[in-house]
Length: 266
Ligand SMILES: Nc1ncnc2c1ncn2[C@@H]1O[C@H](COP(=O)(O)OP(=O)(O)OP(=O)(O)O)[C@@H](O)[C@H]1O
Image (cartoon, rainbow, N blue to C red):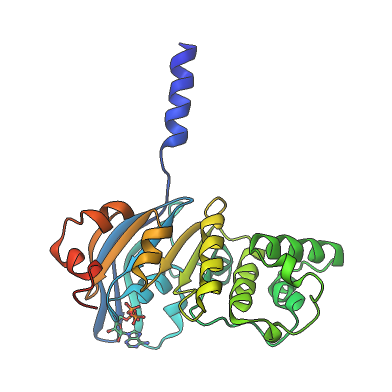
């Protein structure tokens, strides 16, 4: 009896948990439908790569998850994105709270023209965290998790704009981490970086998986295959194939996927 309970516990621990359950998601810019009824489940503490040719709806999908598209006039989403049984597309969602929980990092590093320290603490102060000791601790923790602390600890009050592109992008990741998100949405986070900075950001993303769920849009096939657990191939607003990354890159089920990953279009 005791043994079977132990075995069960081990089984439960190895099973994955869905953190985001996307059901029949459609997204429209006015009359134009950019996402055509996508359903997929995102697993907790995993890295999911979204791949596909330009204009296929990857960024639209990503930005719908934390409602970044809300600001676009005439844009609307249909379907459901369930996060702990709450539909993130509901009208009554507090989008500010949502974006704290589901943070986003963009293609081009976009630090505020402020000090490194202030970049991290800016949003925290809005969230009523004002005690210096607490702010100091969060700054150190976030920069450490973003693998930047050692490089900047002696210049925290210097402008963030004095950092290299790769450092700026890790600062933007640290800024997101400081909000204690559960999910991080990364939209081509290393495509604007030189190869060394790119490698550092990739290494960081792999590390972050222990604490966060990551969804990353990438045009870089080798990056997707190196870092992601699952890969979703989008084409013309459709989700063509979604599977374990190794399967997508070695034995895809769909011919379009095969043609895309082997570079025959896109
Ligand atoms: N603000 C917008 N207004 C109108 N149409 C848009 C807007 N943003 C995107 N689109 C359209 O929606 C479709 C999907 O675009 P999206 O940016 O999601 O594609 P993507 O796969 O991320 O492309 P890329 O890889 O080039 O970034 C495209 O046809 C695009 O032109």
